[in-house]
Figure 1 (cartoon, rainbow, N blue to C red):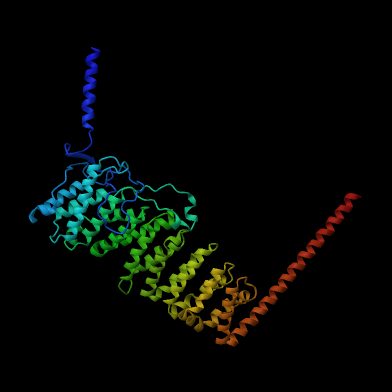
Figure 2 (tube, one colour):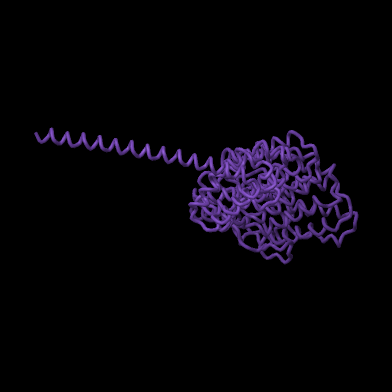
Length: 505
């Protein structure tokens, strides 16, 4: 009896082990969950771009995600399909669909030893699809586009799991020196991104048909991927989203609104997002194409989303792109200069000299596009802040503020409004000329004082007289304060001595 039971168990184990054989030529059907991550091996024989497509990266896929391929499990044959050159033209679109469906199957790339043959077949198939999309001159049908979008979604759309980092990240401006987190599946993902980019750019992909499948949900998932820690992925996403914005006019308001919401969440909640610079780069091109007069929607976007982006501590990571977007708005409509300058003053850094230098640089670019009426409205609070910068003990801040007088347009605005501006900044110039420790700041200050003196000696002497009077008043106040403290100290000393005499007696 025991022997019969052991024989049965042995037969069951043998049967189970046969069912677990790896995929090969004798096992043509693969049933794979759409929630597993698709990837390819690193031995890519074709170079799609100048970026390195073989460097190992860190995995960031959630194996519980079931949205990558609707319909549950996908069963396909993982034998290589015929080449497009080997079939007649009438069969190429059907073969394209078969290849796309085969590439919809996802593999686990965290284990480089699993499914090696299938991964290589899929990689070669994706490369064939890239060539076909780039060279095909036949219109893609609705069914082709449908399957293609399903395949791209299954491969690209996944949950991004950020790598654990110290909380000091946002308090440092050395983020660019840190090694970015790379994705293990990038050699595979890059081909999918290249395929999607060529498909969207292809004139054979009719936008009227494609918009049914490249819909708001698809665009939203693309925008979610901008939080990827892999800079190579964000670079592809930037190019693809730009092409989507250009080709699908119906999606343009939705794209702008979604980017707007990403900025809100970044500024008001998390202050953590990896793709702010890339999104701003796309927006710079979008703003450049705005028609005049600007819509109220665009002005609200400037005031509620772009200007508050100056607040986060990680501003250095995207300030160049943000400054470009802000300047584009002012160049489009110079009436916005007053709002932009007041916004910069609202978020002006108090204790961070690095950010202050960036603000001064951006302020100079905005002032170059500012006209007299807008300058006149904001010049008083503006030059009160500049006066504080002139007296900064950080020599680069003071130096950057003094460089404003090297800009012909800004100097012209100052000259025309000198009767208001000079009384505001004259005390700062005098203190710099007398006391500032840095020789370069001292020399630049004397040059600016000479400009004002040569321009309007009477006004200069009047400001000097007022400064001397204020200085005399301050000296009187200071001497009175010192005498008061001295008198209080004497009273305290007398009381102490009297108390000691009482205790002795």
